[in-house]
Image (cartoon, rainbow, N blue to C red; front, side, top):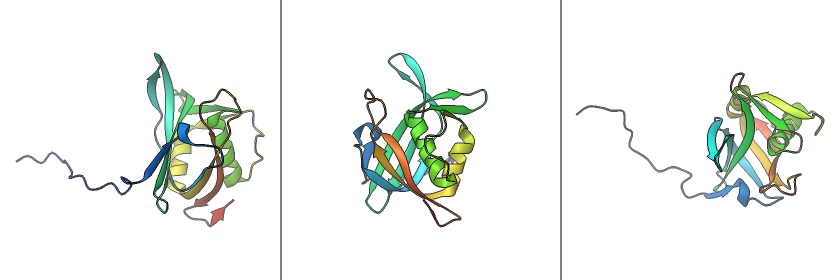
Length: 160
């Protein structure tokens, strides 16, 4: 028999969790837990290619998981994502920057962010995050925005 490196699947410890997607969230809902930011990936929507990344927040205490897709402008030549004021990507980055770095909220016109640095910093340094669903600034938006309320860094006490 040849070993192909196939691992036996064990039970996923989040298999019985309640999962909510971004378009199912309503304003004022909150979640606290682990955060994971996935890679930027291309996907086709209505015959148009878009760039998107996922933010997954898992609350092990309440057995809940939010899976939130963020459509973004992505520039692969320099690995940058772009968030325009009023948009979902902007709201998330702006509130995260406000909580962690004590910046003024809504003071930037937009954010250009090195995605790998952003992703790695969040995945490697945040042990717990609290996020609230908030009404989007655009009345035609089909889903809420996410606002970071608090963050606990792995090597630091609560940051608020």
